[in-house]
Image (cartoon, rainbow, N blue to C red; front, side, top):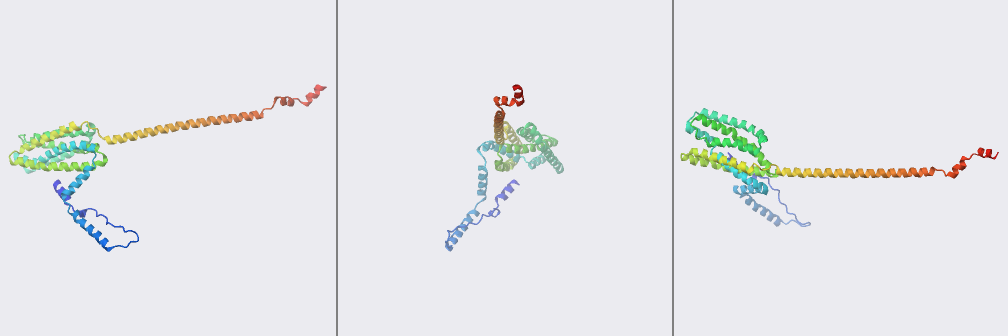
Length: 337
């Protein structure tokens, strides 16, 4: 279905695109329109239309890939190159042993009833849905990479040992173990990509990742078909299990120590430094304002004190006048008698 969707998308014509606005030619002021010039401009525009219509699906794909790839910065590409290679290996392994070919192998080896195969497939899908619910809480406790690796390793081992059990119920148990843990790495993988990629680059990275996974998985059934035609169907499961285990251990070795949200941490650190500087500036302004207010209060107090001294000095009476005023006329008359 992925190939069908890709073919249908690439088969879209130019009619699906938004039509560009008509081109207008500005004439100088006070100049009459020349019919020959207008006719020549329309002919030039009509000549460009066949070139746009002649674009093939390969040109569209190249334009899309180039546009998305140029949006990714160099630090992001250095991380995604390794992750894209590992995801391609894992997708190739999944494409070699999809659930349809797995059920076909079980039917060829043990010849169970169709209803039994249907029941096993239904239970496997149910366990896969239940297992995906526990991916989030587990990732919060042990980390994204550890969740991806430690849940995917048992699933990969189940694929590796799938063709060897001598009983049908043993093989069915390995299938249930594989499907129960197989989907637990999908949500942590998307979260990990979003954590190591800048927000403006996530759409391009997700698009390229999905394309590479689809192309790698597309080659898997061809390899399995060649092996099954040579009576070596079981080798496909062994090879797929080895590739999945290589993906798991390579993922843990390359990305277990990668710091997440580095770009967001830098942004938050800059914001924190700005807040610290702003708070320091505010404190300095408050201190300067308090010092200025205290100085003004001291100056006002000194001014008020000087005014009071001037008033008191103005109200003081000279000692000679005070003595003269203190002598009463009655006292002077009595002294004369």
